[in-house]
Amino acid sequence: MSKFKVASILFLFSTLLLKFSSMLRDMTIAGLFGASGQSDIYFAAMTIPNAIVLFMLTGMKDAFLPSYYRFDREGKGFSHLTNVVKGTFWIAVGISIIGIIVSPFLMRLLYPEFGRYENGFEIATWTAIIYFVAIIFVGMNAVYEGFFDSQKKFSFSTFSQTVVVLVMIGFSFLFYRQLGIYAVPIGYLIGTIISFLIKLVYLKPKRFMAWKQKIDRKEVKAFYLIFLPVGLTIAIGQINLTVDSIFSAQMETGVVSNLNYAFRLVNIPQAIFGVTIATLVFPLIASAYADQKMDEFKVGIEKGLIFMFMFLLPTIAGMILVMEPLVKIFFERGQFDAAATADTATYAIFYVGSVLFYSIQAVIAKGFYTMSKGHYMLRIGMISIVLNVIFNWWFSSIFGAVGLALASSVVGMLYSIMTFTTLYKITGGFNLKKIGWNMLKVLIAGSVMTAVLYGLQQTQIPSLPIILYLAIIGVTGIIVYAAGLFLLKSQPFKELIARGGNRG
Image (cartoon, rainbow, N blue to C red; front, side, top):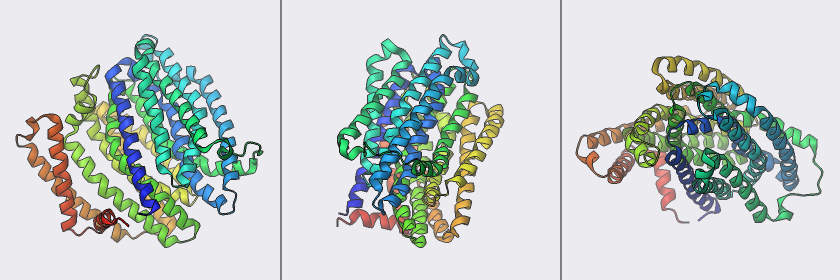
């Protein structure tokens, strides 16, 4: 078995573990605090610093990998790593200090409605401050996770992120009675520190960086000129979530929390298939582009889009059919009641469009980053923020909280269309016939699967115990969908089966 195949399997496994732990974190918060004023404040307050966290974590990976490959070909990989680490440390310290200073004013400006809760502004401010402190360690972790990805050690990056989540969960469970909602952000801060120390121990000080090397400011500046549009583009999604939280905070208690739980739930397929496929495609297209093999670069993008659609479409179609039982089994316990389940399930159904379109866009984005054309993504991302504000205001005034979830799906669709057409132009085009034909087969197989599952729901199966019911729906869906792709002679499906059967 090839090293890349082993790395891919380990990465998929570690991604599943990370997503399971992230879901467990959300289940923990839901069980301990439900859809309450405290949870509303926490989810709203952390969105701004969390945008910077994603800016660092995901943005750094996407910018560092092609940059490191370029320097490593010249024998300067370790020196480049050192420069980026040291430069990022001081930048993260600056962001952290500014964030801590502005948090008290920012929370009152963005969320004046929190004044209706006891200590509302205080909770929001300290939540944001704790996250801003964590950004110092997030920045360092981000660089090294990008470095591990460049070495095709994808599983180590996801493992280090899993450590953060597990520490967060454990700390919340142990200290929520004493600290209330503060236990959640403090747990996150401690987790980021532990994750950083694990990397230091794993690499050992000598391989961690060239400690005595002076920062090459020109090199760091050149890297951040590439990184900034990439990082800002990655943060666009979180900025849009911040816009959502500003609108939802004006509604009744629990809306912010339930929208967040809904988004996290439907985000599972994106986190598993979207992130996995995009991450595995990235080194392949980055290497092809570095070697000036443009045909291989385009084929990599095309395959990424086709495989993304093949995995995601049936998954989200199945989720829509069983959304309320899914919410029930994941969240309904402790402080999270049946009313919260009903609201969360409704919001989740309207969020599914965003999952499909933003996952497709994740592959498209890798093409821009590989070509160092992140500024195109940034421009389109800024347009999407404006569109999100408009659609949030428009849809929420008509549909209420449901409109906020629907707006995310609509904006995701427009964002995906704009990014794909732009990449199509600057690369000289893709094989649209190949992409369209394969996606049509997926649509047909997915439609048949959906019809069969809907028919099952009209029987006595929904009255079975919830886990058994979901298991029957899931297994049946996989069998019917796979059979459909096989009968339609889907080439990507054949490749997948061939690779699964190839042990060499």
